[in-house]
Amino acid sequence: MTAARPFNFSAGPATLPEPVLRQVAAEMLDWGGSGMSVMEMSHRGKEFISIAEAAERDLRDLLAVPANYRILFMQGGGLGENAIVPLNLSRGGKVDVVVTGSWSRKSAAEARRYADVQVAAEGNGREIPRDWQLRSDASYVHVCTNETIDGVEFHDLPHLDNGVPLVIDCSSHLLSRPIDWSRVGLAFGGAQKNIGPAGLTLVFVRDDLLGRALDICPTAFNYETVAAAQSMYNTPPTFAIYVAGLVFQWVKQFAYAGKQGLAAIEQRNIDKAALLYAALDASGFYENRVQPSCRSRMNVPFFLKDERLNEPFLTEAKAAGLLQLKGHKTVGGMRASIYNAMPLEGVQALVTFMQDFEARHG
Ligand SMILES: *Cc1c(COP(=O)(O)O)cnc(C)c1O
Image 1: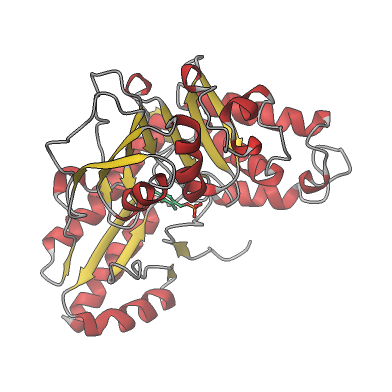
Image 2: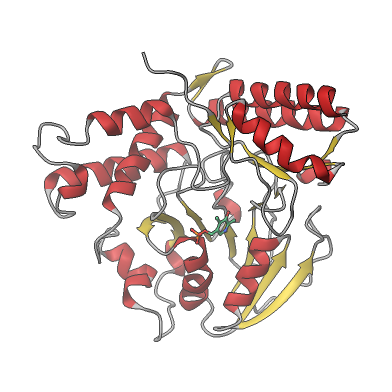
């Protein structure tokens, strides 16, 4: 037996399910009797096509993605999509962005290079702003449904009743909960938060939104081209797709609290977040500043009221087997990212450590 691994609270690239890592290791030199590592296979060979098809099928099942949405395996990350979405959907016209934190602010700035961007509402990174000024002739409305840095999450998707498509950047909570597709035109997310290795970007696009790309859109980033080629117009990130496929199988088999699959994962995420926020709220030593109704289940920024204790906190946490808790540089303090692969025991260990640290330094 190998020793237990430490708990890894990185915001991304982030912790992966240990059984998946073990399977990847076991299959590294010879996948399925093929004599090849997945890294060494042609993306057009029957072995890899079977891997990619299973991954797409499992993801479609898990998220109940309707038949009129295409699932694309792309590259370029969330930041790439900040350009690729307006190149495909804006028609050079109007784009409304709701700014709820750092990531949506970046999305607005990038889209401005290609479209007439209006910030429809702007929050302070602690709550979702009200009173959105939406234009009925916008090509789409962009929101970031989980602000990874600020720790602000939409627990209900906005319902746009004027027919303007909603685009969601769901990078950091994709596959942590179901998605209400009736409200979404396009969703995108990088894999490295909740799904697999960096390098794979997932795009879900309703098929009526294909075929609108600007002339200047790179062909490899044109959703219509990528969809027509089953995500194989150019070489996709094959190894990342393979690992993501194993994660999808892991989620499908996941059981918790009498539930199975995505419902079980969501319930555990709810329980983990509740445990951590309850500990923060019960303490005068730590604090989380996000309005409770929109606190993220995935990314929990928190502060020690005495900032001089930040360095000792991180050093002692690491010694206790709790890794990568340092907050984002623009926010400071701490951040615990508690993605799907973080067990409940990891959050329990963090809470126990925090209480112990407070008892010694408070
Ligand atoms: C991480 C993240 C991104 C950026 O992803 P890259 O893969 O680094 O381009 C964009 N949006 C959100 C919400 C993220 O969490």
